[in-house]
Length: 501
Image 1 (cartoon, helix red, strand yellow):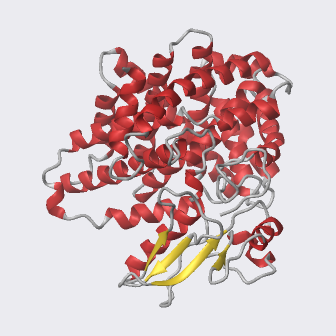
Image 2 (image 1 turned 90 degrees about the vertical axis):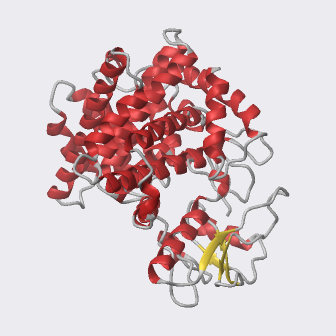
């Protein structure tokens, strides 16, 4: 996979970043406009101004679509606020966040049979663990060094196509399976194959080279730099019609099974749907739903911890927002310092949703549910408040990380209570995986600077303090635990003890 010269680069020229400065600069005026709408209507219910602002930026959408979009954002933020308050009260009464989460999951699964509840919780556990695995791979390189560039080892697109192909193949009864070829300790070789499709005997029948650059011209140019004979060219769906050389937007086996075009949210949803019905009934009789729910709560806390190490979003926000002023920044500052920030969260979510739907930002696919985007915004703003307190000494780093963990747990509970079926796993993977974490860092940092340079600098400095502590722990853990699906839980537990020990 290749990218062209972005300001924020990943490990080498064959890798693809999640979040780049160019996209963030295009999102900037949209964020400013939505935040100004909030400032101008800070004493007016969000329901009265958010739909109009959404429609202004998305005039091609029907009024009904816009209203649904707005309602999704408002409902998601409201649910997350309610869960945050509920968790805060529980902790004040001496309960752990994991125990509170277990009770919330009992409510969410109250209408299910014991087996259905266990399967549901296991699906949620898989989603959170997958996010943790991706985060661990993001913040550690194969050499055990730490990178602030959230690139998922440069295999976001490849993994997406391989996973969705395999889910489709399983559903169709096809013997073919796709596999992403990753380096085995020797680094990435020039012109190496990205994805292969194998038959039932393990024989390679198709080879693909994936390039996901900023536009078709850049992607075409990337292909011209290498010798990819024998490999089909895999490109973003929206660029396919503009490619001058024969390319494809999906991988395909000889029997006609294909992957899905690159939309991350759909991939996550398909993954959860496929997993939810494949479990052996006998395996679940030994599980206690409460124990499983507590385990999910712990994993959510680990996700918050690892996400704190990813600082590239804050770096970009500082670079393009520092010194920028908006009219009424004192209103934004008052909102995020007082906690009366419902409108700030709604405005941020609205801007992100518009950016995704207009294709301005590539790191959130078109069609991502507005509720999922709202929760990215919610987590981002909550973390902004926490990081500001860390920077000013009102919270220690340990206390700040615990608060961030509480936010993640409460939002996970909100997602589980409001989303249906496989959509829960998709939302969890987006909000708490590398994409949501990196995007959250940028929009959170941006909101900090929109509240004034003093607030913005405090948030940035708080992020660096927290990240530094986690990075220090990651270095000591990464050399002992590789980020694989079977070992990631051990890795994050060791990381947790390193930070809090």
